[in-house]
View 1: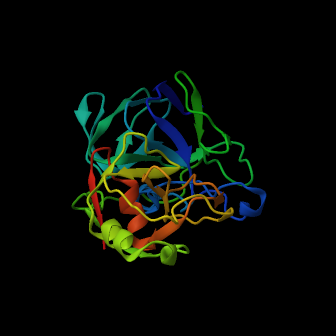
View 2 (view 1 turned 60 degrees about the vertical axis):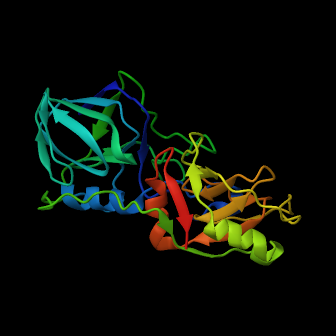
Amino acid sequence: MTLRIDRCGWTTVQDLGRPGFAHLGVPHSGAVDRASFQLANRLVGNHPNAAMFETLGGLRITALRDTIAVITGAECEATVDGQPVRRCASFPLGNGSRLVIDRPLVGARIYVAISGGIIGTPLLGSLSHDTLSGIVPLRVVNGKHVEIGDEHGAATSLDIPLSPNIHQSVQVMPGVHHEMFTRDDVARFMQGRWCVSTTSNRVGVRLSGVTLNSVNSGEHESFPLVRGAIQVTPGDEVVIMLADHPTTGGYPVIGVVHPDDVDRVAQLAAGSEVRFA
């Protein structure tokens, strides 16, 4: 065993997920902010799909052998044995050293990659914790010991840390039910100011703030959903589907977030304001 979880906080183990099982009702899952996930593995010298910690903060881990780590994603306060460490830069984690990740300051999700990656017994080819289906190959709990693989490649650092790619304006393409909404509702949807709800999670980012009057916004026959799909519920709540989204849905999809912007949606913290473009 090479790591001990002293305090788990709000943390899961994630890789790039388990594609190819939607026909069985199993979500893709995997890292919510894929760009930050891939950057962390690249900087620590891991295989692109190596599993790591995805956390909302409150994570405390102790290394049980010398290793190297990298932190990407949301801006946060992080220390090793009380000394600050820089994001997007590889740093040594000595035997017995304690890494502390506090809550995000800017953004929502933090990625912690360890050289060699987290290893375990995959389920359907992945170590990702799927919060919707309850597929948990490796649960992160206080006191748990976690195995890390052999070092894969050389670690490196960015000269300037990348801040999470957060922007109030999110690019949207028409959804499959776009024409079922009235012009006025589409205009309100696109021009309105939306606020991220505290009930947002890995399944989806929930937004509120605009009333849509369309009579077509009720429930429909179940149909396939994709990452970034924007559903409108009967209560005028808008939900942007993320990594653990269901494979099918019954609420109308007014739009789909452009693939380039889904990662930035994943970093929107509760209370953030969002506008569509």
